[in-house]
Structure formats: structure tokens, C-alpha cells
Amino acid sequence: MAQAPPGEPALAERARLERAAYVLSRSWLFVFLLGLIAFFWLTTPSGTFLSRPNLTQIGLSTSEVVLLAIGETFVIITAGIDLSIGGILFFSAVCGGKTMLSLSGTNEQVTNGQYPHATEAVLAGIVVCLFAGAFWGFVNGTLITLLRLPPFIVTLGTYGMTFGFGDLISGGSYLGSPVPTSFTANFGNGKFLGLYLPIWLALVVLLAAHVILRYTRFGRYTAAIGSNAEGSRRAGIPVNRHIVKVYTLAGFLAGMAAVLDLAIYTNTTSVSHLTDNLNAISAVVLGGTSLFGGVGTVLLSAVGAFIPTVLQNGLVIKQVQPFWQEVAVGATIILAVYLDQLRRRRGDS
Amino acid sequence: MTRTAEAPLLEARGIQKQFGRVVALREGNFSLAHNEVHAIVGDNGAGKSTLIKIISGVFHADGGELRLEGSPFTASNPREARQLGIETVYQDLALAEDLDAAANLFLGREEYLPPPLSWFGFLDRKSMRTRAQDEMRRLKIGIQSVDEPVVNLSGGQRQAIAVARAIAWGRRIVIMDEPTAALGVRESAMVLELIREVRNHGLAIIMVSHNLPEVFAVADRITVLRLGRTITTLATKDTSLEAIVGMMTGAVVAAA
Image 1: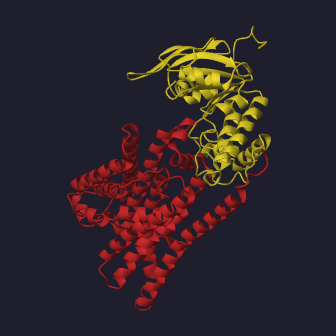
Image 2: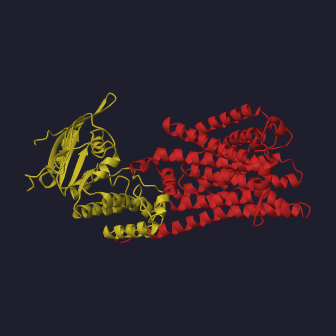
Image 3: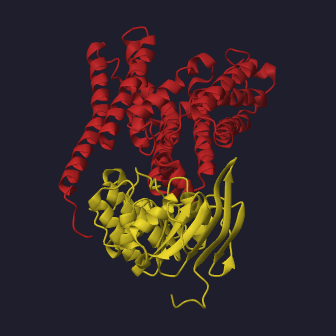
């Protein structure tokens, strides 16, 4: 019983090889990112790409992608997918923005750039954003578990619905006025220890999410369900309830990204959020979270979140059509998933 | 058995189960004594899996009665069965392969750090790890590390972990569905050894298997099912492989 079967050394060898393959497959993300940064640094006029204002710009836009990617990481670890978070972000931003505008003063005042009740209005707007996001996430999770529909179909459906409802509420273009200027001044452009507040928020949420995923029951159930949903059910884990929680979390974080969106850009429109899903999902898969579920880390998703934003930023500076970013990010997703599949196949053999 | 005065540990009488128009069990009778390894054998479609899934709470019986130590019970889901001390090792292992052995051993029964951390669901990973190591040692299961994702372990080691989980938590009965089906010769031997070890720890084992030589190697008694009916229950030492095969296929009519 206690003696090692003869296959043991080969097994240890395989485990070592796999770990090496894993480290390699993770480090290529850093190599890729650094290569990208080096490329833009070397091919743009000095003092543009690596300048402080530009790096801040990248940091700000990445903070939104990071929040989306954190929620998406949890979802993908359950072996699900959420294609709706970009739509949820937009819907939440419209609802939150509308709330801020309608509560901060009369129509006339707001049109003239006066926001007498800005503070209350902004706070209410933030709550609306978070609630709207969590609501759609809850809808996703409930439809997936109650009707036993594939996550891909449910979230594709709510993707359409959130964009549609958002445009219906906003009238299909920008909100009538920008959100109260104090919101942007105090939060979107606010700084603490030299770093913008939205970046701080993303960092804090990232750390909390990392701790939750690695050290708590919530994280363990997430990985267990993605690894073997039926087995988890038999082990007594409330699988459906947990899946609802995970999608609600993803929606909530999309709502939080909507708060950042309003704070940073003061206004919102559906066109600017069409590629949010693509960016978030690419961040997650580049970060090594397996689409097969069971394994993943939010920290690497956050590193992956820089790929789309750095690409976007660098291409704009190089005055290349920024649409190339979508092409490049799309291609990288396919490549990253292919590599993951190769790794998994080798592991299964 | 000298325990005649005492009720059997588990008893199933006239269990019936139908799936749509297919009758899986017409009359499942089964009696499990304390501290025995009891094999359920039968051809495909005989109703073996259905019977154990009713005992373990996965299915509900359409008719018949289940008694645990003399008193009637029904487990409406696996969780309830587990609360009664009935653990099941499923054929498809039911391990979360991306998690390590310790996490799997405690799956659904995690231990938490002391309050206030426990309120947030913080796991006591150290304690679970130590207890997992102890359990592996107690059952003489040789795995290099309880921190390794089980996907990296061999089939026998994975099966051993699944069995270890059932033993660690089972207080009365461990049900094993084809415990060696996916294993090689050597690994099967390891699992059979483990089954003997479990009995020595005072649990009763219900084992469903196609592999008759294995059944004869470890089982104390054998119950034969055929076409949804219990044909007979025999002590292993009083019967032969040929006789059992005959009863499974219907070539021999049981004389019990």
C-alpha cells in the first residue's frame, strides 16, 4: 500500500514539466506586455508614450478593464462566460448618470453647468450604478441556473438587452449634460499619494478579489464548481446559488466600472463600450484563466488587462487607425485560448 | 452472523424505481450487516446502480422501504444521506480535479479560521492540510503531496482520495460504485486493500462491481440482481464464481 507504484518517477517528471510549461505560458504574458511597451516606446517620438501623463491615461483606462476582468475571472473559473458585462457597464452608467443629472438640479441649472445638489445626486447615482449592475448579473445567474441555459446564450441575450435598454433610456447618444463636475474633480481626477483614485479603487478591489479567490470558501467553491459541477453538488456545495452569486458579483463589478466611467469621462455612450467585453475576456484568458474552468487568478487577469489598453493607447499615439487594436486583441484571444488548450491536452494525456 | 437479534445496519425491502416507461427496479431487496463488505452484482441494466443511488439519496424510490438500524428512513438528497452517516464514492470519482487532495477531502465540509475571520469564510488551510496528511497516512495512501492538484495524480491515487474522503466522513456505510472500473491491475489491488482497511475501521461497505474475481477477493456477502429483482444473497465462502455468473445471466435459478 505505502510503496510507490513504478509510475511514480515518471509522474513526478511530468508534474515538473507541466509546472515548467505553466510558468512559461504565464511568463509569455509579461514578455508580450513588455515587448508591446518597448515597441511603442521605441517607435513613438520620445516623451510621448512613456510620459507620465500618458502612463496615467493608460492606468485610468485599465482600471475599468481590471474591474470587468476580475468579475469575468470568477465567472470563467466556474467554467462559464459572461458576454454581457460591457452592456451592463453601459446600462449602469446611463442609469447612474441620469440619476446624477436629474437629482443635482433643475434641467435649466444642469444645462448651464450648475449642480446645486451635486453631492447627494452623485451618491445616489453611484448606488444606482452598483445596483443596476448587480441586478443584471443576478438576472444572468438566475436564468443560467433556473432555466439551465448555457451562459453563453443567456449573457449574449442580456448583452443585447442592456445595450438596447441603455440606448432607450439615454436616447441613443450622450447624456444631455456631463455629470456634476465635482464628481470628476474629486474622484475621477482625484489623487491619493500621486495615484488617481480610480486606479486605487481598482487595486483595492483586485487585492480583495485575490484574497477571496485564494483564501475563502467563496473562492474555493468557485474553483470546485468549474472543476466538477456535479461532483460539487454531490459534495453538498449549493452550486446553483453560488453560480448566481458569481454572476451577480460580475455584474456588480461592471456597475462599479460604470461609476469609474462616469467619473473619468463625465459622460457615456454605447459606442464607447462595444469592445469592453472583448477587452475584459482577453485580459482574463491572457492571464491564464482556463476557459475549461477550475483554474485562474485575478492578479494575472489584471496584468492581462493592460494588453488591450496599451495597444489602444500606443496605436493612437502612432496615429495608426485604432481599430487595429480590436483586430490585434481578437487575434490574441484566439492564440491564448489555443495555447491553454494545448497545455490542457498535454495534461490530460 | 451472531447478530440475529439485532436489526441489520441497513435494509431495503421491495424497492421499486421507474424512469418513464423503463422499470429499473421491480423488487430490490438488500440487507447490510454491521462491519461487512457486501457486493451487489448483476448484468448491465440489472438495477445495481439504481439501488445504490436510492440508498445514497440521488434517486427517490417509487415504492418499498428503507430501514437504517431498524428505523425507516429516506434520504431525499445525498446531503441527507451523508448526515445519516452514508457516504458514497461515485464511479466518476466526483473529485474537483483542479483542486488539491486536501481541498477535495474537505470539499463541502471546509474548516474555517476562528472568528471573526470565519464570518467571511476564511478557510483554515493549514488545519485541513494537516488532517488530510494524517488521513492519508492512516489509510496508508501513498501520495507525494496533498497540495498537488489531483489532476496530476494517477487514477489509483485519485480513486484512493475519493475513497479516503468517504471513509473520513462516513460514520456507518460507505457505498462504492465500480471502485476499480477505471484502474489498472496494480491500482485495483491498492483500492481493494483500502476496502479491507475500511472494514477494519468499523464501517460497512456496499460495493457495486462487474469484476467478479475482485468481488470474491474482498466481499463477505454477495447480492445478485437480475432484471430489476434481487435474486439472492449469499455468503462468498458458500458460493462460486460460476454459480454467481449463472444467476446473473439467468442460466441458474437461485436456490436460496
